[in-house]
Image 1: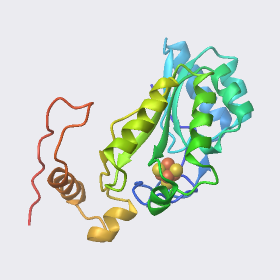
Image 2 (image 1 turned 45 degrees about the vertical axis):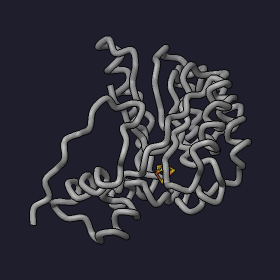
Image 3 (image 1 turned 180 degrees about the vertical axis):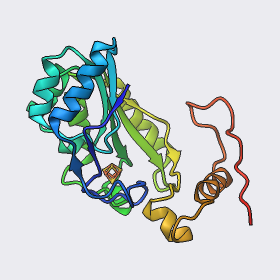
Length: 222
Ligand code: SF4
């Protein structure tokens, strides 16, 4: 089942569909979230996915989850997690973390608006720390054409050797509601998704390792 503890994100990555509803960070009351989770548990649910754009280290919530024996997954930024919070995250029942690393070079990350005080090495160490507490840890990568395939392959090997899954980078999807979409086409209209998908298809030349077929094109009307 899907649960949300919060919406929004205080960061401003240019590829993120955060405009309109996912901008300002706001939390739902913990009692409301826990009541939903308890309702799901009473119906036999064993795993929930927090669909929060950015699952933060909320120690009171994590402590409550730890008492419930639930399994859950999250998406987050690894650079906002302290070691002691990662330990609590694992104890709370988190079995899956997707962390957007995006690119391996700080300058390229900065181009995407994903600035961080941490270096790539430091982020990898934090991912390794997460992996020592959580069974599945993924570093999400995107391809913006600025990093050589050999360089990326070397980093992916390093991550894989430490138990962290890093995907074969895929091009950025110009989500309606993202800064990238706005720069290309302005305000999204009723055909925004069709337009974004068509643009993505036009620029993608190979299937990702997770695809076994091309997705259907979307017709864009006049
Ligand atoms: S990609 Fe993640 S960190 Fe960046 S703005 Fe979106 S939710 Fe926030």
